[in-house]
Image: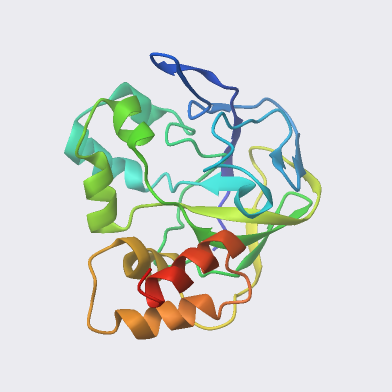
Length: 216
């Protein structure tokens, strides 16, 4: 079943840690939002070196993971916010084991494509006040993922996130994340070679994986 969008979220850079700024605190938007090749209209990223751009235009972090995090963090107030992990799209019923690199979805009238897993960074741990969160994301592959926008459109809460085409192969977001950032397995090199060959993989990540394979 295609999930229903619970919220489309956006944020602007704000003071985060001393002189550091971040737009990780995404809030639900009222009414239709424009979905563009650079993301949700009105959304921004403070660190353009590591976030944003066409291959990371939209971020989805599954709402189903909030139950896991309540088991880890207790009744943390941020877990009630749909954009608490810096995500733009909030849905139930979809996770990293089900979604593949290259899967295409209709989000409202926009067409979007899964481009890569999200690499966890210190900002998540700082936002929640729990230093172990990044390690737990790596251990469990509860990472979320990014989309690129193939066709502009509009979307809002209540729309269906409809899968219209599965990516080539069987490379789930979870398998891709585990091979790159998780615990190495005996078949890691074979998996990394399969990842590099994915047509829909984000170019920057493709280069990083190629460097791993080359021992750089």
